[in-house]
Length: 307
Image (cartoon, rainbow, N blue to C red; front, side, top):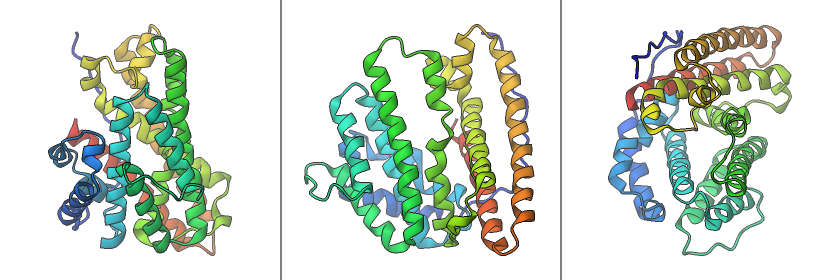
């Protein structure tokens, strides 16, 4: 394979890591061990030290106070275990039912849980504690966004089950570039800073801003992880999917990095527009937009480190 050149991604947002990172990581690992999450996914708990959920959370939310950061780190562990379990059981009806039951828990439709399912018990526990820490309107928005993420998982599993060998490139791109699947992470910004947005602030420009950030994150992850995934021929990478459509990989890299930089420029424009037009809730918008900057930068830095 010819050597590939990766142009720089322009990101001037400040670098940060929460001072509670190590302590939160230790607490999260202990919580996962006590609830049997690692056994559930047949995941060695030592792998968790490689993943470093507490440190990942600390990079995304450098300004979070201690209690919210613990809840966010536990959530990241739950999502990581879920992703790992679904990858190992992608054509298994148990995986499909697990995701459906997670949605039911969020909707309040599943209260009797089997003690044999460590994951659902941990998920329900996390959700109950989160509801005690957050306002009702935020809970509704988060529940809607996490359900969008979970339904996205169901859609992919159903597509793969119907056409296990030939999961089409266009379908794969549709799944991986579905921007709403990242919105649940952006809700955590409000929890991290304990500054919550009134519902009336969530207008079309605000949704466009979140969609823009989601695209930035998706493209960043694909660009940075490309080298490793080229070896594995991982179809989940949008760059490789485009390459399968007969486009030269170096050309795809150049175009994708250029698009990524345009998204970051557009983020700055939308951010200014929101702050200019909102007079009453300047503090809430400013706190949230700074949180988005931290998520963008923290995600980029983390993927650079882990890849």
